[in-house]
Amino acid sequence: MEKAGIYHQPASSYAYSYDAKTLHIRIRTKSLDISKVTLIAADPYLWKDGKWQSESYTMRKIAETEEHDYWFFAITPEHRRLQYGFLLTDTEGETTFYGGRGFFEPTEANLATMDYYFKFPFIHAVDTFEAPEWVRNTIWYQIFPERFANGNPAISPENTLPWGSKDPNTTDFFGGDIEGIIEHLDYLAELGINGVYLTPVFEAPTNHKYDTIDYKKIDPHFGDKETFRKLVKEAHKRGIRIMLDAVFNHIGDTSPEWQDVVEKEEKSAYRDWFHIHSFPVRQNENGNIEGEPTLSYDTFAFTTHMPKLNTANPEVQKYLLDIATYWIREFDIDGWRLDVANEVDHAFWKEFKKAAQAEKEDIYILGEIWHDSWIWLLGDEFHAVMNYPFTQTIIENFIEEKITPEQMVSGINEQYMRYPNQVNEVMFNMLDSHDTARILTRANNDEDKVKQALAFMFAHTGSPCIYYGTEIGMDGGNDPGCRKCMEWDEAKQNQDMLAFTKQLIALRKDNQAIITSGELTWLEASSETGITAFSKELNGEKLHFLFNQTKKDQDFTISFANTAIDIWNNQAVSDNLTIPAKGFLVIKENS
Image (cartoon, rainbow, N blue to C red; front, side):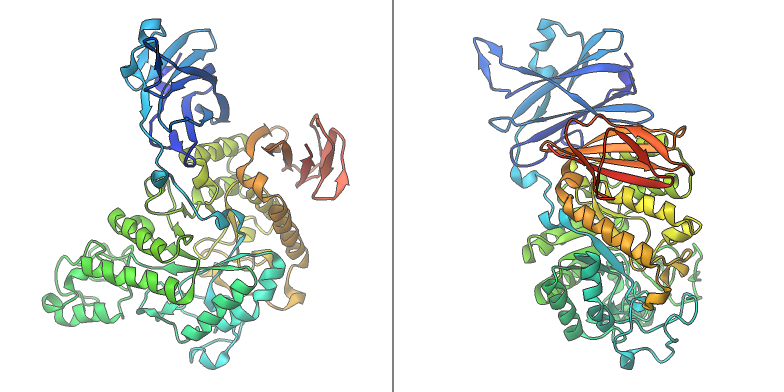
């Protein structure tokens, strides 16, 4: 038995309250080393005749990675307290006891030593991670407003180029605005979208608006507050939620606050709003050269145009929290996406969540973090993050073929095990965005690969997002190539991809509960056959997803216990299936 591979930690993704009554218990072991795990558990105060009244529960293996196995049991302690430990038996029949003090021989005396056990003292509803219920049922659509549609040419910048007249560079303007989004809300509703994420809409000099001048003003080239209010109201009429982008890590260098610091230096009332090491802070002086690590103040990356805000300063906190609550209170937005969220202090985000939820209890708080994010997802900061490690694993297999199906499954399982189930259920999953090359370009224009990757992502737990134009086959490399103008000429749209996307969204919405919360079982992941297959099961109902990455049809057999229908192609099927080349099947097995 490889004891070094065994791991458990209370009050983490290994032991957490799923709701006000239920505890989820996980334990990690070395891959293929352990054959059985038994959970020994009971209320620590439950004694009879001088003996602790523990019960034994067989844990289920729920995930395998290249290095580890993960075991799971959901338990509902009657009095919301739990004392517990594990009996682990390896493949050679050796058994050990593992608890809060480490490993012990499973003798009667050791099993009766209460000090050896893990403790979950009490399930508090207030400490239980809870996300807005509506997010589990949301299909997102990300819009880069400057490039979606020009609904009011009268407010476009003077140097606006004709719509779609060229591939964009970093400084081009094409006149996209909020009125243009309003005009296409019916298009989004018809697509099946019920959540829109907008990159920044506040006043800023650039086309991307991540260098804010005024957080309480809609950029005049996008519209005004009344236009934005109309957008939210019209979206809500169609059942579409609106999420805005909050850039609170940094501000624009043309903002009044920063310009005051540039002018008055040490005497500025805003000096402590920023992380300034020395003066002056003017461009091209005192080491302040764009892109160089010699800056005399902290910034986003090394760009002089985005000075970093000091969110530990009470004045800055008050300023930003007022902005956050203002747009919720006055315009009824439904979510905040938080830019560069990992570089802002945790204390501020805790206050942010309290303030935002005080205005709207079911506001969705999404952090932009590109790496493991467990410390932000404990329930007191964010509900989710942009799930790049998860979706990048999908891309590396289906799109780039850098990893095998086996490695992909291992990576996906690893990501799922990093977080509690209710966190995974509201993670923000996307294959491309304004910060990445478009998925079609990454796939070298192979539409079958894109369809497989999209279908695979939509088949998994989490809240999926389509980047504007992906549904009509738009391409583009990294920024600025991924920020082309939306193509509205239907003759130039990929109508096959559009029909595919509509069908995929409809399938997801028809099977939302089982995809979001169903028990995941991998059936196959083979680089030899090119097949990746898995099932989701909930309340006796099963969905089977079968993917074939090879260039020839592949046979696959499932022993169905009940009648089965290929719901993608709308036809009955038998146990012997044929997965089309570079395609997939979705089979529904009724209870």
